Image 1: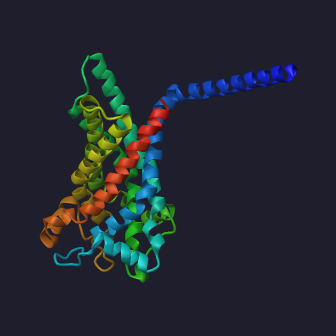
Image 2 (image 1 turned 90 degrees about the horizontal axis):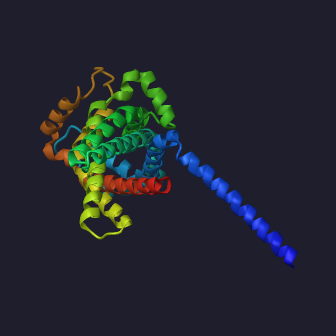
Image 3 (image 1 turned 90 degrees about the vertical axis):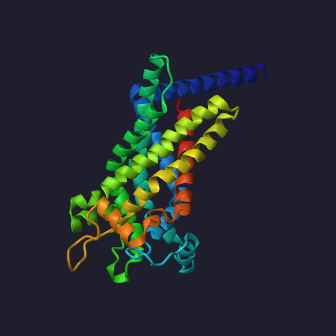
Length: 328
């Protein structure tokens, strides 16, 4: 009996020592300089891809809303519910996930970059602020958000364009559809047919939109969280949830007009008869939309866009915050 007890104690001690050794190896890996530099990017990508899987159907409806009635001031005015019902009743529920592969690739590139760069910039700003015995200012957070968004948008534009092309393909007559099999099929066929530069169609509004969205999302998230921590007794989890909700609203409001123009520019293709594109650029697109469809068209589908952006922002920020916590 005693020998069994001694043997069991020895086994437990060996098991504990083995687990402690494993934990130390994991800790050493997580605190390696290269790992510390890469973690913000990895955590950002995982958070963005998680949010995309949840929000993809809403994004699909948002794109269809923005493209409805193009070029006509008195064109059709479909609702988000109407478009969703039409897709579902036609027996194509999975169409709500059209372009998911492109959406995931976009998040793997774009959100990985924007959250990674923002976190990297903020660490540098925090270090400078601490050395000067002061707090990071709102303007510094805004500059970090704008810079991270602009850089990430340029990197992620090809995947973003492929997503829009895949989502808008179903609006064309059956004979004119490209029927892309996946995001990689789209990324190969688009430059083959239109040139490599086509992958950066709408890059300018994409960059501006990303800067506006990041300004609203990351800057207001960081600022709201700091203010809530200072002025409320909310728990850390509730601070994160409230700050992400505030950030979602500002991200939606500031970025929708640029998202609208981006969608129009990325969807356009040359007229087979004239060889001309409908829009020459950002300003031409904005001018034509105002003249032909009215100013309010830029905010068409704001409710759908908010439902797409706010939860996406909240899921992304909450998951990223959690991942940053467990990989400290």
